[in-house]
Image (cartoon, rainbow, N blue to C red; front, side, top):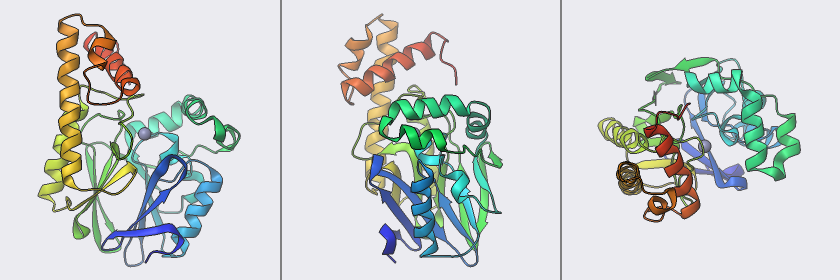
Length: 276
Ligand SMILES: [Zn+2]
């Protein structure tokens, strides 16, 4: 099952790696029902994704948004059907109450899509998840889990135990440093550690689908956890020692630009001035 750009990464788990931003959408077809994780950035991209889904299944499609960033949810309006969209409740809050802020951030990050982003109907999710929800998708058990803040306030992972797969959203990125623009750098490592424990307990740790880049394994997620934990403690120590942002960022395991953002946000968090 590899038509229309799908790669079957495990039993009936298909990943479409979209070239622009190298972002992943994941399709989990069941008997008479199917699940799609993330919906890409624009109407045109979502229409391409809908055609790719239709090449695999015509079953009613439940949607998941892994978080509120445009490249994971701006295709919602094009793809949503009767079963609706599930996401963390703070994702819904962002897309419902702060839609134009989210849209402006998107256009700033991706100016080449500005025209298309301006036309997108921002469709908030319908079903709130707080800590977790268990779904039955045509006989397949699918677990939605929020293990804490990390890449954003509202990261939601999707576990598919019968296939040994965890879809992480941008809690994990392959081929690029983690994005700290809306991140909680002091909480990301514990959030990822908790997700690794859950995935292993559910037997969903053979394959990890990151938000961006190639599908990977638990070893990579553990390595990213180690790096995030190191960054967390560099920030805590730097803050205690009144080190400058650049002094701390210079020691970070990630690139300087990403690390500067991370340290700034970690310092704000330690000063009590970081808000969701
Ligand atoms: Zn993101």
